[in-house]
Amino acid sequence: MQAMRKTSESRTAGFREALSECYQRFNALQRDEKRCYGVTMSQCVTLEVLLGEGQMTVRRLAARLGLDTSTVTRVVDVLVRDELLVRRRDEKKDRRRVFVSLTANGRVLAGKLKQCGDDYCDRILSKIAPERRDDVVLALRMLVEAIDDLPAACGQMTTGDDNGLGKAS
Image (cartoon, rainbow, N blue to C red; front, top):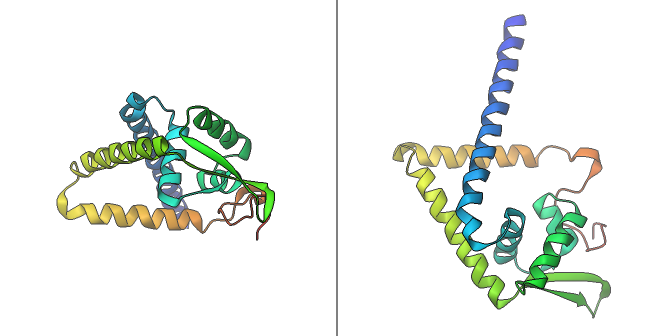
């Protein structure tokens, strides 16, 4: 029993260390790749999410990004100022709901950032043996599913299923 516990603890520690190293290196290198576009990583991810998923409330965007609404509001403020995003109120249903979406310039920049990320990921995959690439993608998808299946910390909402007011619809 003691040997099984040590093996489990060792596996857990190895997993945590590998995940941490992967996260740190991927973010550092990706940040360097996208720095030439003049946006922070938070701004980059915000633009890319809106490119892929379209207009949404700031609260839903925050949940999607895993960030506090106040943090995302500050990111959105800068992107609105830079004319990459636009805010719109829901005039028909609930004026308290504010949606953000990409401007034409925002779509162009988000497309460039997405392509930059795709090129970066292609370079990473090229370092992995061709016959193992699908295994790596499958393992990452399994990891995402496992993380998504965990309960949220402190009762926080983890999905974007809200009505823009912090309440599930």
